[in-house]
Length: 371
Image (cartoon, rainbow, N blue to C red; front, side):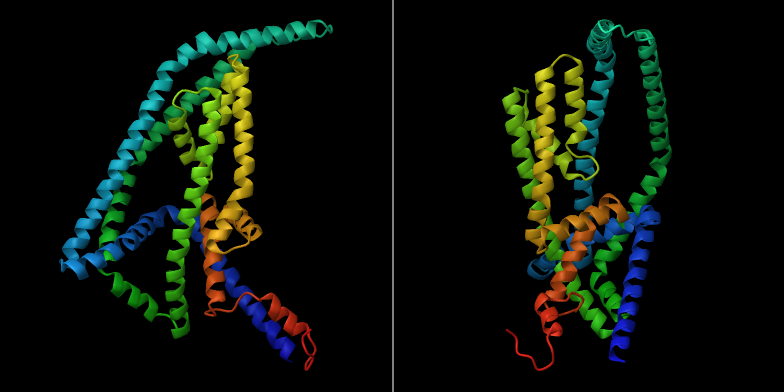
């Protein structure tokens, strides 16, 4: 009877966890774009609230006025950084568009012709003829480039059409931040008040652990970014690349993003170098990319796991599972959630993880002395 009851509780808990996971998957996959302004507003309010609380208590400033001023300053700073980033990206794209025809006709096209002639000459020695002429290949390549250009123009047009919607979402985000920040305590009390007493206590402790875990996460990825920057700077310096430190810093920032990564820059750079006859640089860039990828895949789970208190294998599994379920956000979100659950279990607030010593005690016969 007791065994049946344990199984019943296990199945109920499993169904409960599965339902929560299904809701999270639906929210992230299908409603994240709509809920994103509120999510950003909550994050900004959570960051500002401790500073607002200190200013109000220590400097005796008015709560609402100080909160609104802080919100305006934060969003002005974000807008300023966004404008600078967009300006740099626009300048880079413009420069690439200007240089592309000259690079294609003056460098890439002669290199491709030379490579093609070398291939045909080598195959001719073995009495192998290629029916496809170089002009046909170039025509197909030119058609592909035109297709890409058409898609790029359509993408720009779609972005222009979406600007009004993005502006509305920005306004919603700012207004929501004001509402959340100014009524932070009231909103928290209302949410906790809708829960059972035990669930409310778990929620409060979970929020506290979440803030600590996110801080540890930021430190760990800062260390990973510094490590990647050092590898890139040394490698590019050895290759004799101009402005090695600046290029390394830019690539290291991209490498933190789970979808982009340093391969987005290093691999095309290596391919172009190989095609244009800079064989040494191209091979060196590929070798550098392989080294960085290997080091990061080994070090990232270990560094993140040590910081947040998870085993490297559990961290790696959470990253892969999170990416499969929730996309890029899941790479960070699921390991953080797992770390918070583990910390709450270690503190005895919840009991979901069976400890090895507990499992050994249960396997021992009643009345038996432990060895």
